[in-house]
Image (cartoon, rainbow over all chains, first blue to last red; front, side):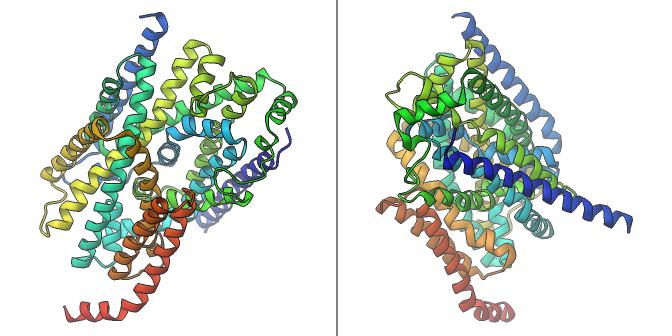
Length: 37
Length: 485
């Protein structure tokens, strides 16, 4: 099923999860580093 | 009464028992010596409950009933438009919520109008802002609440085969009982149960659709009807240009960050909750719920022809699902509507009982048994008022004012709630911004042909410019007045 709207929908879903998990990973690393110090 | 009607009544009674039980359990968070217990769930929301209540409130019954109808009529563009609410809520949680939460905690704000008053210095000017923000919130959200009550009443009536007014009374009475009992904690916990039901409903629908057809055939059927359904050449219904659909993202972001019944949840998080954890939950739940409008594409390709596009979801349930599943998913759709209605009722009630009271009476009691009683009476009184308004207000007026109310509230609140969190303006700036946002968005929606996204965004821009401009112009004079006092 090819469609610019559905392709954009899938792409933006991927971006949303990238931002969510990227932020989760970055903040968890920062917190862990803080805990070690 | 046939077997499935008895099953629907059984489902409803079980769901109501769970909600009232949650209300009773959450009443432990309510303390007579701290209004924050009732108004902010004692600032105890954890990451999953917080994320659930944000998503449940943000995705109202529109996502299940209205949006599939728009997709049926205009095609896949609505799937994208409706989806923007998910990343917008996530961005608001990740990049705004913690700033607001920290400032509110420091100042002791229990509501959004109180936050507006305190962040602009408190005192007489702060009380004036709190009062104006409360009045705007009550007027615009009350209309919203009435339209939600009507939607719940209509769906409940067809589900249980009873009169619409009886259904509305039944559905709203339960919301009134648990909200009055447990305040925001009851609203947030019931929202959590309801959002799990909504996500389960979405999953069942997706499994039915994607396992029953071949994707190539689905696309071929849609293209045979109208190629614009999958490859739209305009942005309709969002605007004439294709890019109009992207305007839903800033609109939805401001909706999540600024609307009093959404942003008050940021204040209710436990102070040690990590917003990056909340963001992940919001993304997952938002992604699942944003799939629902695809039902419109399925109905257009494989369902019977509809006279009214708005019937896409009800006819889909009747045509493609087993009657038992149909009843269960209707309950989940009612959940979607109720999770928005309970949040509005709580916000309107707290604006009346807490904000207006503190704005009008300088020495009004707070954090006392009397204040808690007033908050509870306001929930009952405004819930009943909403029911009476639904019964006697002309129907056309409700839908028209509903559309007007959401965008206008957003435009009025952007300066005093959003900009003030990062850059503090003056009382005059906040007052002018609220009035300019209110009249610009309201005027554009009433007097021009601009869409429901464009009017409020222009209103929000005008309001923001006024907030900064008037604050810069009046900054020195307000400082002089404070020193003189």
